[in-house]
Image 1 (cartoon, rainbow, N blue to C red):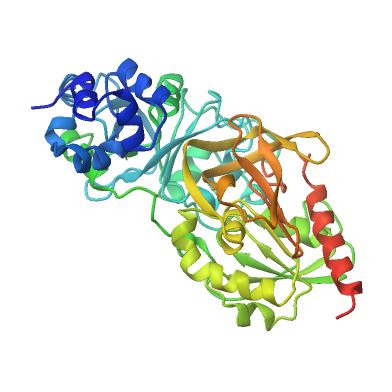
Image 2 (image 1 turned 135 degrees about the vertical axis):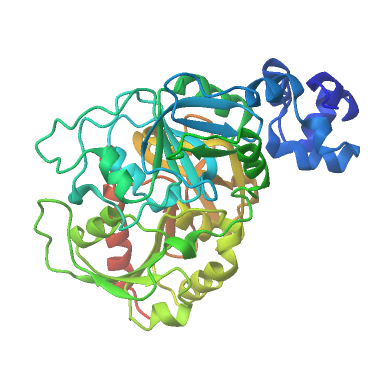
Length: 453
């Protein structure tokens, strides 16, 4: 029989011990009490520590009430969370098959613009996106705003019905574009309540079902959510990376790039197209290589510098093949610039560790402080893991920090030509505050080229 939260905390030995055993703060335990449920991501640790069963941890009051619901009038789709919550709404985009609903980690993005760029960001692989901004669809979609060929996200949740396109660049409505790419959507949901739930209880698995026949098996959908392993320990870079090396020559939109003066190899862990465009516009001849490229593969292109791209999944999992390659490049003395997943992988290669954030940073309005200058930049971000600053070796300094939660946003080696940031300086979507980082990379390559061998 399911226990209430107070009883579970008692089995763990009180709030302080519950926080220690599950790796959270006592404030998180207070939020468990407030929400009257323990997030499913902690169930494994609790079962291991107490001997309780899965049935003991499933909140009966929440799960039974939610899962006994029938589809309300007009509802054609549902989002079922691993904790048993069922959020009903109207479906759009692609219908889901009974055998293959949209399954992934539910997250939220705070950006007010650029939904097409967000949906095509490969870093969203394995995730269902909730937009906190209610008005989605009015820009429509167009080929220029796609950041990748395929959509890696598992689904989309919005508050209001999608609005009709009203933009001179639009060539297609968002719903039609999603339908053609097999991506399901759900609107009519209280996204504020869903965002608060993720904020307070942390990310969890969800299943988005939009069946063509309108039939729902909520118990089966929840079982699928509980069975999905989650992003921790999951390598997704290989799934979104290119499969063979190729040249990239396109600069940023409406820009005539200068003649290239430096050769750069960009390692594709899930690179957004605008990152490659920014490198070209900065004066780079860019060769893109797959995520699994070895140091020998990378160095065979005789690069002046190596760029480590963004990407999805757990950096510790991707590190198994990426870190040996990065260390080989560093040992060769090549300048290295990394962003997002590339930032985390560079940190691991330099001797640090990473960890999973409670909510993650996703959106185009994230404030970051440059510790050297004190300047605050508004940045675009999309990540659920972060670098553990306490694990950084003595020869790596912290360069940037988040003003939201104090987590690490940038590092630089004090003995090697290597630096990285957690955010997205290419700004697609987002502000352009951090575009000078590409010039910093160029300056580092120029300085290395002038140095005696």
